[in-house]
Image 1 (cartoon, rainbow over the protein chains, first blue to last red):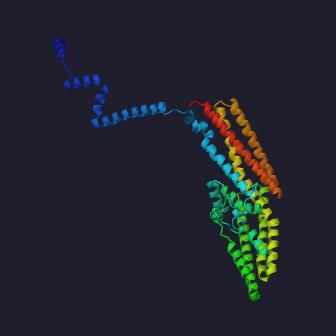
Image 2 (cartoon, rainbow over the protein chains, first blue to last red):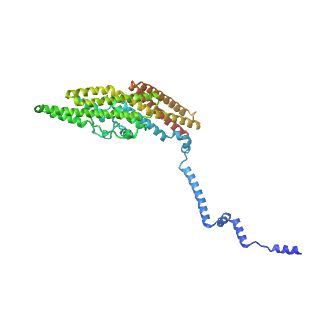
Image 3 (spheres, helix red, strand yellow):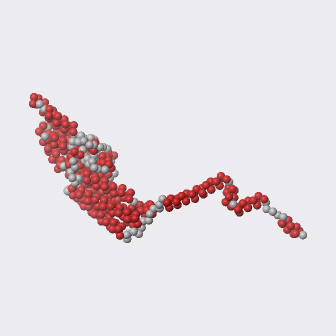
Length: 165
Length: 254
């Protein structure tokens, strides 16, 4: 009899109303339920980040598809760097400058006497690039004034010729 | 000799290009314009009057001495600048260092000669200044010009070593890249790389020959021709590099 009474009481047992609501919500809206448990602000931030990351990834993919995907660029840091035309050009220009400087020291055609600077400092011909001209001036090969039109400084040899007269 | 006049200051150029000049050598050289003294002499000569002959001679002699002193001052500056440029060049092997020291020793002699000439000015007459001018011009052509040519050759050669090393390094990098991309069997790429190797080898040979000629201390024209030859071959090597770059770019998917 005692057991029967107990079983009757068990039949009348019901879950707590709040627990029922939370369980139902957990089953039907799992993520929302968990978020709500953490708090509104945190959930907002997490959601924003999640959506933001997704959008960023999608954007990157769109860029790759529509803006072009270059194997050349992709590999450049490790593989193609040595063939990068920009760095090759820079090195080739260094050789070009050296060739021009060598031609200054050893011209195939004697340069016009009027382009020489005082005390026989070499003057850069006027057809040199600005870079070579600038370097030549910085080095004392050609003074800035010597590159000006109409400048005609007297060299040591010219002065000796005048003194010999 | 204008060529050598040009070469004198050029040494400084090479040294700076090699990034080796001292701050002192970077400073702009003092202006050395002889034009005012030449003009002053011309004016005195044209103003000479038969009525005041002695005064005219005195003024002309004074103007001549001023001009000669100016010439010697400028020549001294020129030799000093060349000396500084040589000293500023980065150290090389024993043979090249020996060559540098020989040139510096000769420059010292040049500077002493100018000093003696300067001290003798006070004793000169008009004809004496004329004779000194003629002799000085001849002396400079046979003594200063070879030093200037040698110094230019040494400076150019030293600068060229950096370019040769950079080119050899670049070639090795490109060969590795081509190999990793498994493109070394590609006909055009293989041909361009083979050509680059030949050009670089020619540049190295010309560079070695230039050094031998420079160290001998004679025939600087020959040394400069070899240096130019080496540079032309380096330029050709880079042309091959550009070709390889273009071929690889065409082959790789974009």
